[in-house]
Length: 288
Image (tube, rainbow, N blue to C red):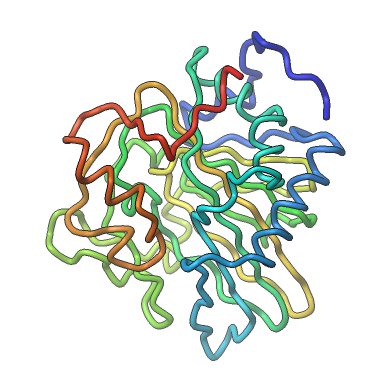
């Protein structure tokens, strides 16, 4: 992998869109060695599923496989390819640059696999609806292992990171806006897919090595896959110095069974609303 400078240069114009739009696209962000290593990470995750692994329910029109795993506690074990990627790649330094030189901590990973027959699209949602965290210095780095045409790629509503924060989606097979909490704390998700022309939706043609970086409050959704195609993606979550603990209306991520690791319960026990997000299971990866 290419050497990462200890003092990264100022953000490029493309990267600067993150603060304005809630999302930015970086062409050729990963070199050949980094691309091979992130492929090793994906393969490890599929071969070692965690208790959070999930096969989403297909729909009649999209019967293909839609598999996900998230927050595997073993990825930081010695010898795991994720450790090599997180501490050895250019991503942490890039995020520090975007955040004005902030330290960078790692939150968790997610892998997604769509293949076979046409697989359903990922419903529009905001990750912040599921996460007990708040702050400007929050980022998800979305990495695809195959070329992904614009119409088959992850999509975003430009500027939606400024709010409002909607209720989460249960990812129901029959209603993309089916609310997670339904207690009135957050407004119900709008049916974006039914009125796409009313929303400033953006996306890109993506090649292996490109990355998309977005704030977790940015509305986003993934297009379906076509018959005979495969889409393998790795999403990595990070946070910076201003990230704080923000209680959810109920059990949130643990309540829907995809984040069942003890770090979330520990945060609930040890942090109050507004406390800095710090925990031994959330390692600092920059500076090294």
